[in-house]
Length: 456
Image 1 (cartoon, rainbow, N blue to C red):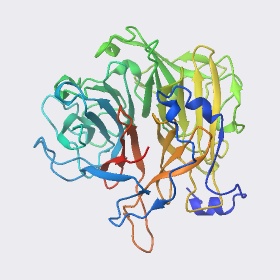
Image 2: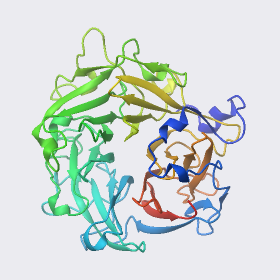
Image 3: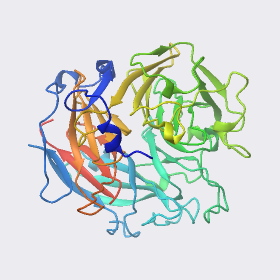
Image 4: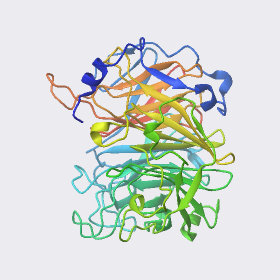
């Protein structure tokens, strides 16, 4: 971008200490299973510098490094791939019932530093460098296994869990066969089994569309899948997939269905909406003419004279409280957006057909903790929201408590720049163990998966 984050924030008006989020925060946490235990103190205190230079945390919290890129996979299949991104913690089963199964994306493009090893039976395109790996974590927090769950895909960014306990991993690219050496078209969703990679289906779910996918969320009552698109020129769309066999279990999405894009009457671009709490009723859904984008990208196909609604940088997506929440990471006019903002969280209520701007992110006077560009996002079982930051400067996990107070929960301390010009990779993949006692996060670069415990 033409302006640095520091320059942008230096010119911002004073908004008080810390960072500023506005919106009906309490509603986001209404469905927490342990709402009575909500942390309402506005945070856990200041972040303490990690003497090992890996992760800064509040006093009383600690981390354990579970996996690093370039190390050997415990399965012996090769090296741990690079570019750690979206992740989810599934409840353990069988002998590991008190443990966790982590499934992790690797957003490797054609030039990925450490590619996902090509494992027989789990490889889609032998020229693809991305994919997924899984980690089996014991009740004591030890890593018992680490192996490839999907290989030969490209730019696996985020995704989402299904009600039947599989992981939908999303390719954030539209590259076709013949581009960047690929032998097959990319830009699809794949279904990964976090417990038994042998049951992962390496055939893409084409009916769910071929575009620059970011994340998905499944309505557990209807089986409708919501999908975000992180794309430029023009910006992406917000989609829903109506499966022919809703909630049918593993492999059921392959039965096909209908892909639709959201149209908000009177709203051409969501970044033009700046007022927190703004509500739009009568949301419409328009069928995508060609979901596999044979000739034209789905976001540029014909949607009638009434047009379609776009939004810059559509990223995180999750289901909760009877609605789907999705993130617009940021909007910059100098990047072609219609208006500027530092990040938004929207919700869509399918019963009321109502879209609402729930949270607006904003800068503060403390330019060391700007809090902008939200990416991966997750509800905390302790009644809060955790937000991964993906911008310039310091990279944090921020928490928002039930009272709307914002606090830094973690900061990536791994400097990939120099002492004179430090740089930190984004934090990604925030997810909680089912028992709520452990928060897992990824550092994108250098790829590092960590488990965080403490006085939640």
